[in-house]
Image (cartoon, rainbow, N blue to C red; front, side, top):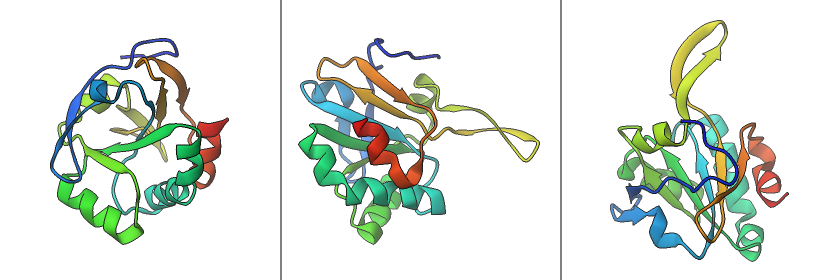
Length: 149
């Protein structure tokens, strides 16, 4: 599926790091920074998560609620949050259904090899549930700046 700015953000319901169901449409009225990442506690994912952690107050001041989403289970998310003191919610998509819906579970190429994997993309969703920005080339060390730009 190819999503574009101006499209309604596809709704979903997933378990968060506390094992509670979280539904995107229940967050209407808030600006959401929904970031997709491959794996808890891997080098680039750590850099990205810590950038968002270190600049979380600035993101909150701009009105953004940050949600991270990966295929990892809630227990893995709990360890990741605890290890890096992450102040935002992480969602678990083990069947890659939401990632497929958002086009982030797709073909990738690295070192001449083609495979299916998670694309590190971020979707900014406005208060009405509409995609306002899509960040396809995430720069992990300065991701918060890309969100705020």
